Length: 125
Image 1: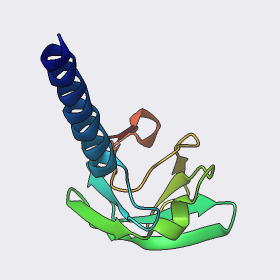
Image 2: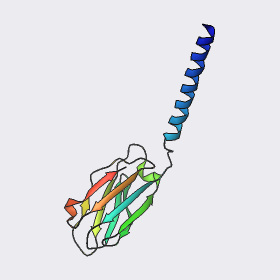
Image 3: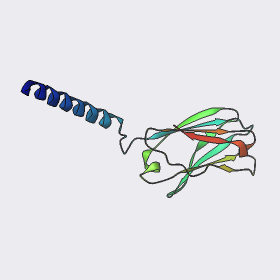
């Protein structure tokens, strides 16, 4: 009986140790950046901006009918902060914005800009 109890305790301890180790691997570091990928189906080059509590920051320009990824710093997505993306086609008065999004370190945001900007979509992975 004592041997069986010892075996159960050892098994339980090993399982708890493994689950704790696994959880620490999946946590994101507070300073981990994130990626913004813009798929531009629009016929004009587009300037991309990220807006948050800190203001508006120009990320870059994506050429017409091209895809570009931007590595973004963690400071833009501090705890509890939401971000909104804005696209301004160069040579046009049209602008499109996403809804407010919560992004965590290590995640990827994919924003697809359509020829009709009002049909654009955004997803966080």
